[in-house]
Image (tube, rainbow, N blue to C red; front, side, top):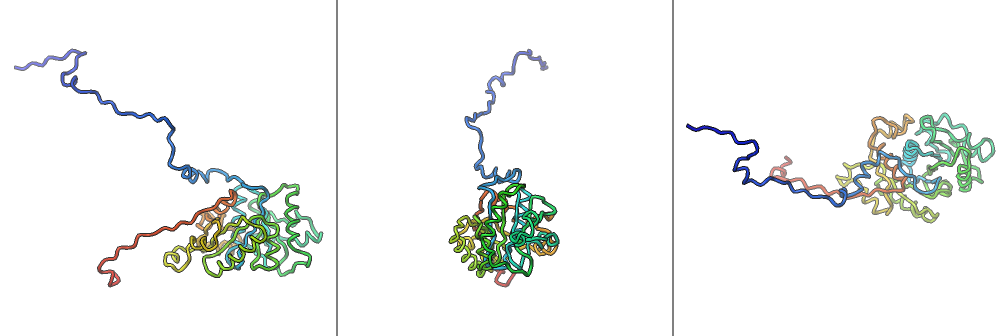
Length: 326
């Protein structure tokens, strides 16, 4: 008969003595762990900080295109309010004589009592002509003239130069940005609008007529001494680009050779916001076009640009029955 005897407390079974204890391999890091790229961190944390203003203030930016109807006024309204929402003081100037529309897009058409022409004639002060936005107090609008009116003969680029100098020395403080909504064409109104600017944002659409006019405007801006030129490609439709019915953003950038500030997709909400006098960037929930304008304003603050890339899709596999349309 087998009997079981208990082992002493300090003894171990013989088969355990033959086993070597498991020691996991550890590796000490001599250097702190780093991510593959700091750009990944910056892209994640970008919207958790305020952008750093680059350049000297005030930054006078003219928004132009050459061709009409490409979205200059829409860009001025949405980028200007995006800058104001980021905490910067903005003065937006509607330089379109007789055909102003910026006050309509901002919903301030009933508050414009004086214009720059009255200021130059001595009929009012500059602070009386500046219209403060009813939603963001650090955004102001100034119109050059009233609708269906003509400029006096002595009015020209020197008037905007005087205006910029007056805004620098006003008691409320110098604004961070002065945005000039340039009229269409390359006549006297265009020359007047670009005289006081040191930066330019070229708004274009991916069609051949708009690109031809934009290329002409780039040459005129460079002749005037404006070298910091960035472009915004507006009304982009990815479905037409995939069907090769519209030029891609990369094609536009290669044709004009400009730094890319933003790409605005085609959005039906733009028409609704224009008719309501409520800028697109204030919509809740935000739309794709509104987010694109906010990102363009962010890059404008830091004098940054984006890069367009070509994405090649894998061709669809075609079987035997694809010949019959199945």
